Length: 420
Ligand code: ATP
Ligand code: MG
Image (cartoon, rainbow, N blue to C red; front, side):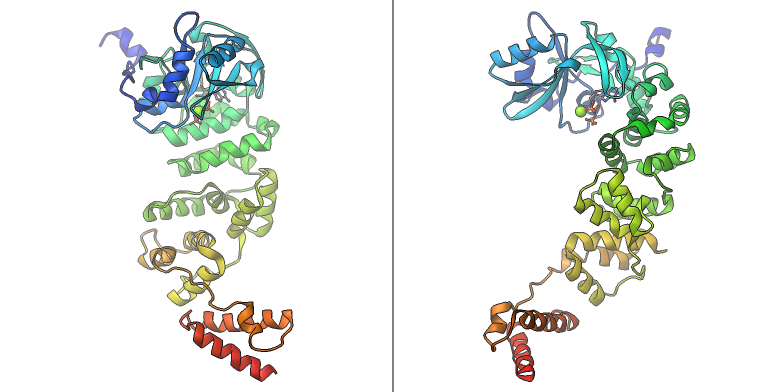
């Protein structure tokens, strides 16, 4: 290997065999925006993930064509074109029902948060330099040839998330990059986090409060479910950032335990449940965090499980069934996972495992009686009917859901007689 090559690092392989490049909708965008008078390449996540052999969902494009002409050429090719962010050079092109963001190559003249004053350019390297990390400044042409102006491929395969240019300066342009640094490390990082980047994140942390709730929430949710989320949280805590991000102190040990349990169970992570484990001590925390990140009511309800003072004792099968019946499968599973994380049991504990997976073995039964069944037994008021149903249901629950409809009807009849 010559000196020159070792400095540049590994050359990226071609992506010509990548399935997403050949999807008809992707090919239509390339065809509409290729040929004479301009060049268009896929950029960012699609190229990065394809180079790692990961599945590619969203494809973003970068182009030398100015936004007005992107609109015109897309429409001429029979594609829909929406002027999503013309001042920043972004047009959404829709091909066969799939949306693609197409952004004209640009240099950020002045940046504050997401509001950048931009100048369009035809220089690919200049466009690369305004992006956040080297591994996000990778481009691929329609033929699969990869363009890597900043050595992003070498960083990608080494698991190095490196800011492009001076880290502190790049963060001051957009403080969301602090969270993105942790998210990309949590997904693609190997070994230690880049020391310069980390130092700059710590030094610039005061800027986090300038970010909108929505932007922080969306990055944080993605960070929470990343493969190395536990390490990213711990590093961000050690560098004085996590309390500022959450607006409170974290429960790192509980967060680690939840992740370990999810891994042992092989279940998909849920960002809000992980946030509940990480940041909720008492019910008030759930409210504060839901407000801080503008979460939905359903998300707030899930968060609140993290602060419920429930016993952390392993439920026996009968108690577990009652809980599952009361909470429904999703809330039940979340609650058991948190209780397990709070217990001292290991992630491989078979009894907790059985409790957590009860819904897979036991279908929550429907209570067999309805209002009309009680009405047929006599002349009762609405509240009386409700009360009788509730008592019969409680009896059925306490009996382990074993009585059938006839038995329950007989019970209701006896109740009706005694109250008549
Ligand atoms: P994913 O879609 O998996 O989050 P992505 O890299 O495609 O990954 P996007 O948010 O879709 O991320 O952004 C597309 C590209 O735009 C990024 O790869 C990066 O080059 C650039 N980019 C996005 N956000 C920023 C930012 N805050 N600062 C600088 N560049 C950014
Ligand atoms: Mg993307």
